Image (cartoon, rainbow over all chains, first blue to last red):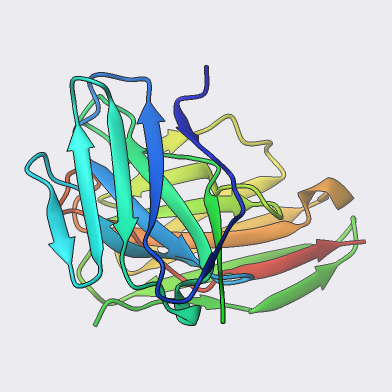
Length: 112
Length: 116
């Protein structure tokens, strides 16, 4: 079982659609959770950290379910500029290092 | 300012060459990272420096040699690389090197390396 699993997609959606990505992680000791966005041939950029209570940033909402070891990202009113790969990222669980575990990424293509 | 800079942007080298990749940050971060990323794959951690000391080496071949001259600079020295080492090499930094939701990693733009 992969440490962090995501559906690679691609998700092809029209502009204005709502799209949801899911991610599961295997280490119950993990404490920090993130969504990064990576455009083609660019570096990953932090989209948002994910908190137990859930958090929202504009059109983006992230949820964490520790019991199910499940993280989600919801994008509302999709824009063409949201087209990218979304990486689910989790810490390795010891709390002593900065080591992060990356999912394979989910590709989103928003069409006009 | 959340900027991590990397030079060069692109590098082509032969298998017998020696070259170095450079990374710099001025955010006062005390942890710096090297990652390797192949096409359509997620970044793979190579090395972590925390407070200028090497804290993680993910069993990287010795033809890759990291160096942290000070808390703002990170180098990756390359020697006798193989064509399969061609990839995007990403540098990142974070405040303390202890993963938390508030101690996030910021990535540089990367060096795209081609080994002939």
